[in-house]
Structures are given as structure tokens and as C-alpha cells.
Length: 237
Length: 290
Image 1 (cartoon, chains in turn orange, red):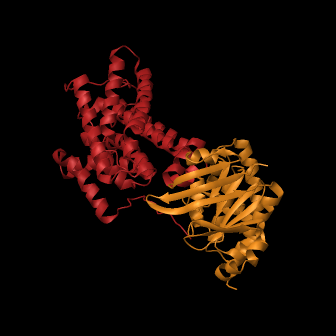
Image 2 (cartoon, rainbow over the protein chains, first blue to last red):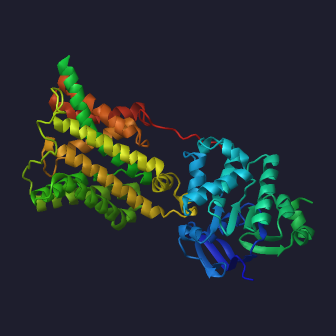
Image 3 (cartoon, rainbow over the protein chains, first blue to last red):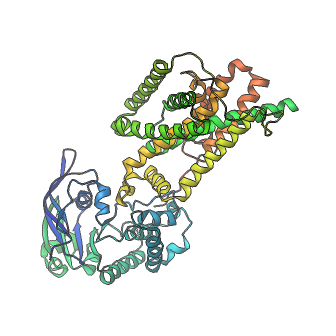
């Protein structure tokens, strides 16, 4: 079966600063994959390269077999890639409802109303905050809003950039629990970028480990966790 | 007392013009963080187009609507063909581009339509019932037209999907792209709408200030002052700033500085706002928690 996402020998650079060197990775349809690595390893850049966000890309990126590298960000979104970016990217001055409506920008009004209910099913707190300015939400609520907004477009592939960043452990657990439900019940493919390796290993089916712009290891969470070098470097054992 | 009331009301009429221009400036500023110095000249050019149509025998309101259509297309075209090349240029390059546009449209208008001062018709019958001792029918009409146009603009931004997409693009272009919005086109659309607002201001102002290529020079200055007064970042505040400034201008002209220094008042307001309250009277601060 064709993987939902495929990167083949992808180099990426900001201006003349090379960040990724020959990254090859795959996300099987319906799976949940983690991209782990230290700060500056190129995790965020990988996601930005997929969505063509200000990164110069060389190599092949395919979505369900179709080349998407070099296409405009908004067209990639239209092809079914939802992206919760670094820093969450919520529209701070707009209300929660408007943020969600924007998530469903490409869809019909009726579908949007239905999917808003679905989003409230996952994140009940958003219903209470519906008319509040997104910028006034707590960090955890903003992260939930960012994920809910990405879900509103019914993406085939969801990219998440460090959803645990800056949040209390209990909030992180809740968000990861919901991600698991979304992946399992809706069969939505998810590529998760995380610095918190331990949390991610419990959640996903496949792991890629990034180091200074290269994939240095990949495999099941068990294989990665058993790797002596990985344990030392990322799990502090 | 009567004289005072007259000054206030006719100030509101002038304020209607400033309100439209100010909102046009704010719309482009919000979306691009650039100040469109050519806004007034575009409005003037649109007004000439309206006059040409009217002189060709097109009924006034039909000419009005056609002119809005022309202005919209012209605004979109200018953004797509010229201004988008300056999106990532330095501030100074962008300013030069805007000044270039200003000069070009001023010159084109002079070339096509000559520098002779022309009379521009008002659609409002000078003896209409809604005229009062304080306001001529045209002044009442232009306040009404402006309020209707402002209402339409706000309904559009507040309640339509496209309006929401435009607000989103102005606030966070990158996130907008991630949800599939064609941000480039939203900017062009913003330019189109701003040109429409300018055209309305031009057509409403022309019967009072007369039509000539430099007719908007004073108006645009007041438009800037109004936008700053209301808050250059606040589309609700800008029109209010326009009305306040119109009244202020008239009162100061009548009782304080005299007519010759009225234009200096606009500059005074600009400087005062920048010094004492840079965010304007209604400038909003976005609250962000992290």
C-alpha cells in the first residue's frame, strides 16, 4: 500500500544554511509516527519542508504517492495535510469559534457545524470558550484549539509540532490520549514531532530519530528504546 | 448656538469622507503593514472615471456602481501586478513604490482629463426634503451613503467566510496558508475593497471640493490623521476617528485657527497622536498568553 507520506533524500535549507541532509522517511496510511531528536536536529524543519513553509527543499516529497514538493503551502493544505505548527499558530485576536471556522475554510458550512461538534467531543473545554479571544486561552487550551482547528479540515495526514511544549504533564497526557483516539478511531495518519521521547515512544507505532539533519535510527518504539546509544542520548538512562 | 450646531453637523459630513479614506488606509495597513500613500490619487482617478461615464450619458447611480467595479478591479490589479513585488522589500522601497503610484496616477489624470477644475454632479437634489438649515441634501446624502458603505463593509468582514479569511490573512498569513487560504489573493481583495472605499469618498467629496487631479491632497492628509486617531490597527476606530476629525476641523476652523490653518490641524493631530497615544483612541492591544 502506498504510504500517506514519503520523504526521499530530502535536503532542506533556510537561505544558505543547510538543515536537513538526505532525510528519508515514511508514514504508513493510518499509522502514527514520531520524529524524535534533540533541539536543532531539524524536526520542525522537516515539517516545514513538507508544507513548503519558507524552506528551500531538494528531493522528493510525496503525499499518497503524489509529488507535493515545491507546491504552495495552501495547495498542500488543500491536498489534505493538516499542520499544527511550532508555536501553535492560533489566530490570537479571533474568537475560538472563528479559529475553528477557519480550520474548516475549505469545507461547506454544514460540514463545519458538524465537525465543530466533533471537535467539542474531543475537547469539551473549547465549547465553553467559544466566543473568547483565542489569545486569552491558557497554553493547554490553545494547543487543543490548534489541534481542533487542524482537524476541522478533515486532513488525511496530521502534522504536529511538539504539542507538549510548555504544558503541564497532566495536560500533555490528556492531549496525547486524545491523539491516540483520533488515530485509532478515525484512522487519521499522524506525524508527531517531539522532544519528549519517553511520552512519544508510548504512543506511536514507528519512530524516526533525527540527529543534525540526518535520520540516524528508525524502527518500532521497542527497537529504539532498546538501542543503547538512544537510551543514553535521549532517555537519560 | 445655531452656528455651532451647523459647524458640528457639516463637520460630520466632511468626516464621512475622512472616515472612508481612513478605513481604506487601515484595511491595507492591517493586511500588509504598508501605508498606501496613493490611496487619495486612486480615489481621484476613480472619480474622473465616474465623471466620464456620467458625461457619456450613464445615469448617476449606474455610473456610481460601474465606478466601484472599475476601482475594485484596478485595486486588485495594482496589488497583483505591482505591489506584490514589494511584499518583502524594505520599508523604504515600498514607500517609494507608493509615492511612484501617487505620481503616476496624478500625472495620468492630468494627461487624460486635464488640470482644469471640473464640476462634479451630486446625486442628491439640492431642494430635497431631507435638506435642513444645517445640512444641504448633499451633505445628508453623503453621510448616509458613507454609513451604508461602512455597514456593508463591517457585515462583510464580520459575517462572511471570505471576510473571515481576509481578517485571518491579515493577522497570521502563515497559519492562514495552513488552513488552505490563498493569502496572496486575500491581499489583492483587500486592495480592491480599499479602492472601492476610496472611490466612494472621491465621488462624495467631488461635488464639494470640485474635481481636479490634486483634489484629494488635503483629504488624504485628514484620512491619515483619522486613521491614526482611531487607531491605525483598528478598523472600527478609523471611521470614528474620521467623524471626530471632521467635526474638530470645522470647529477649529471656525473658532480657533481660521480656515487657512485647517490643514495644519491634521498634521497637528498626527503628531499629537504619535507622541501621546501611538495606538490611537481605540487602538486595541491583542492579549496573548503563552
